[in-house]
Length: 606
Image (cartoon, rainbow, N blue to C red; front, side, top):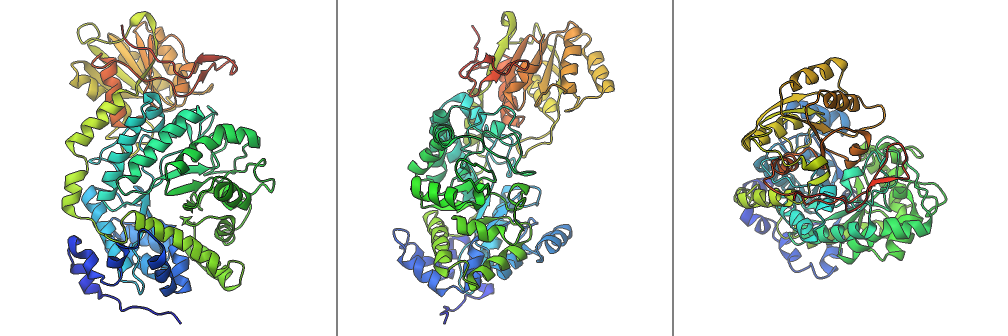
């Protein structure tokens, strides 16, 4: 028989202040303050849960809407179509989910105070359940090109930019700032840092999300970020185990295969995960990749017992939470159906099941697997215990709510924004500077045309990169104008840029992921042919420099977010010296065996 304690009334839970939230669930939240050093109270909590409630604790689900109870009608419609519930509160009530993941595209992250109220609304629903356990709210706030919470929160350089800066102290500080702001709005688990070692320049999914290509340098920065996040009560998540850095296939759309031998894996891929574990990492995310040397069955790592249990748990000694990458990604769905994937992930050693495409299918499949004996309830309890330990460690069980005052006190403060600018200035990398052409001066190069790519904006941007860069240069005393030519500029757009270059002192071109067939190469060549000096800025992968010629100088910014573009503008103008050093090698486009710019390359001004 399940023994349930009395449930606080919904009215009480909706009217308590954030400061009194723990007292409102007397008998539940208060004892957890004393349980964080051991498992006794957590096991007692598990004993009070029904099987359905235990299964729910394993799931981390998306939900549409800016409010837990009153989202916009379009978001209600999306929830009904995809999940079968109207709101986040109904999701928590029906499926007993242990976690919810926020996305900007799901309209969860419009503004800091709104995010905080959404988080509080979710927790009110969670604490109204028969066994009231707070929800662990998570997101992907890697910074750089992957951000879910935008301005006015502090936006910081991404991983490869931090790799170019090379400072573990800056990496730790960036994570501490990011983590503190996430915690202030109710997000207690961040799917960062990326621990993948990007040894493949053609990697379509990792790239600048990685700190670099040197396993030991990456390991040091990963450990620093783990410390930064977890010191402010946010669970860090090292991803994507056993290492996604040498793939040529995006696991969102296919199933990549890593051909590393076990010895190569130990040398290239494992060090950052070892460092994360030694730093006390709270959670590790799996990869939807096949590594035959680690598991000859050719199951994706997410579903591989030899990888998750044999290597991660037993060989590396990790006993924290293992969270799957999104179960909606094609890489994990190519071999098994959606009803088998969550069960196989648990059998492999996972604890949290992230974002299945059809929650009812996944939830019922796990429930049936336990009832049918394929999964034992003991195995289920082991995962629930790990999840509750994480919730207890973060302080979530003691204080699930956040306050408006806390948001105002922490998020996007002047001190945080200034520190982000200083960190970014140390990351901008000067790759090429013919005859000391840079820095530019308003007197000699006052008229500047900024053209280039305009990729989809991450949350850390206020507009197209060309506009952001031109605005920053104008504020530094230049007469700068912007012309967005796009990722694939047409002949007409190239001609427009060439015409606009007439009479300019310099043209700055933002390049984005160049390749042999990229029309951006034609754009650069045509602008060089005008005789107007051209400066290029790689606004994502630094490998772009291998595909172009004739420019007077090249910078690598590693992202097109505002903080990194503003830093690049200050470097262009000579307000700060370039200090970044390449964290990856740049190879020749014609001969990949020849390195044009090695790891550690980076020029400065005399």
